[in-house]
Amino acid sequence: GTNEVGVAVVASTLTTMAIFVPVMFVGGITEIIFGQFAMIVTMSLVASLLTSLMLVPMLCSKFLKDEEAGRTTGLGLFSRWGERVLTGFEDGYCRLLAWSLRNRKTVLASCVLIFLWCLGLTMFVGREFFPQEDQSQLEVEFELPVGTRYERTGRVGQQIGKIVAAHVPESQDVYVRWGVVDEAGAQEFIGDMETYMGMVFVKLVDKEKRNASPKEIIERVRPVIDGMPGAVVRYNARDPFEEMIFGTAGALSIELYGHDMVKAMEYAEQVQRAITRIAGIEDVSISRTEEKPEIKVIVDREKAARLGLDVRTIGKAVETMFAGTTATRYREGGDEYDVRIRLRPEDRQRIQDLRDVYVNTPLGGQVCLANFAEMEQGFGPSRIERKDQARYITVSSQVRGRDLGSVATDVRAALGKIPAPPGFGYKIAGAEEQREEAFRLLILAMALGMVLVYMVMASQFESYRDPFIIFLSVPFGIVGVTMVLALTGIPMSIVTFISLILLIGLVVNNGIVLISYIGILRHRGYDAVAAIIEGGRSRLRPIVSTTLTTLLGVAPLTISHGAGSEIWGPFAVASIGGMTLSTLITLVLMPTLYSLFEGVKVSDLK
Image (cartoon, rainbow, N blue to C red):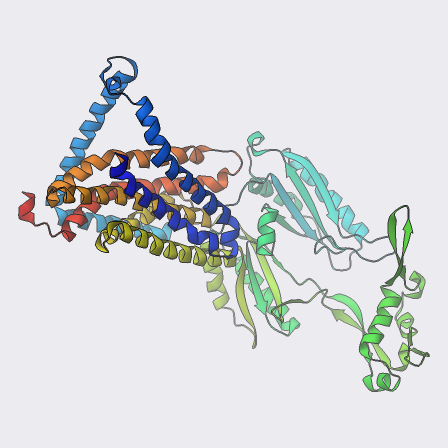
């Protein structure tokens, strides 16, 4: 028995390993998320192969006895009952197989129609990057007018925190943080937070102890908080890990590139108004905030040069007087404290104080700043963002109630209707950009894996035809996933895409088991029709058993509500749908195709 199926078992294991190997080396976010998963699957397959070829035969020789099946009670009775059921199932399958061989055109046409129908369901399947997991937390970010003092920001943050605590009984802890100023007066930042920005972080109880998701809780508190005057509020229930990956708090972001920041801001406001009207878009914000009041120091370079000064030296002197520099460190009790030097608060309040700043010259003298520079009051951006040496502004938004892919399609259509200023361009970023990149890498990994699988099968069968027959059943596994996703409303994500890659290995395994045994029977002298019928009968149990064990293994994930269920639930649903349809099609279509490639005539089937 081991000698008969050993080659097929080795080939089946190698094909499943081959389909996962490219995932470990494809690079990008895909390798980061699924590289270890692919490695674990590969190592597990190696262990299972060694177990099945070495340990299982030895255990069978020790514990399987012929007389067990003859018992009339206990396990023997159950075995005899199961044998009758399986025998009847095999007889029915053989009749179906014989009918399909006599009606090959009907079978092929039916399979093509099923494939086209499932393919048409793709338009009803949404697209997203990664299933959002319930992290039992949410964030309420708020901004006040630029220049708001941190004391005022703190009072608003505490007020929002009290509202959240009162309206969210599911909250476990509520934290408020905002931009602060240290004892020396220099501004500190918490992330990208300035004195007029703040955030309320809400830690919820475990999801098993509440009935509402973070998104539902956000919709509950939104009407209460949004009415707060002077505050721009945004809500976020995403995992901070995702935010770290995407580089933005928005699930869908639009980066607007251009040098003129005034025109860029006008363009960003047009984009903001346009995408706000799109269904599913919420909490739209622009990365560049209101301009801050500033004093521009316009240096007369000729006068400065005659004094031996350059712009860098002048700027450093102004920075020292007003922002301060660390002159030394004070040590006490093992702790170090920065000693910062700058003007007293009363000496840096007016524009005249800036004019009176003295700059040291290379000759050892001091020159008043007003002697070679003009001061001009105005407004300027609080920050200028650059990527690849180009200025840009980001319009970020959250997506709720719709899948990310369809919303991104609507956003692109809306952007196409907005005339961009000369020299400006845009790019869709955030989770949508990551989704497109991840899908591209996964498609590449799947293609490379299929090439490796074909090479393994070609070396086993010593034929280019038989692997091709097996590969013809793979599309039905893919459309099976599409069908179940469309029926359940689950969007296609990189998690469900991984189930496609796994499915290719499982579908190919069934084909190898069936086609290899048919080839063995042909070498024993069976004609093509008899080999197909007998091969189908003999391999039905292993194929069905493999499929059922796989389905039963992932079935608990579909009803799980524990940690990670939002991620692995769609994976399990996609695997079950694809495996079920592909197995049913494989048991009928693959023998039919084999008979066609073998040149079996209709007269031979009667």
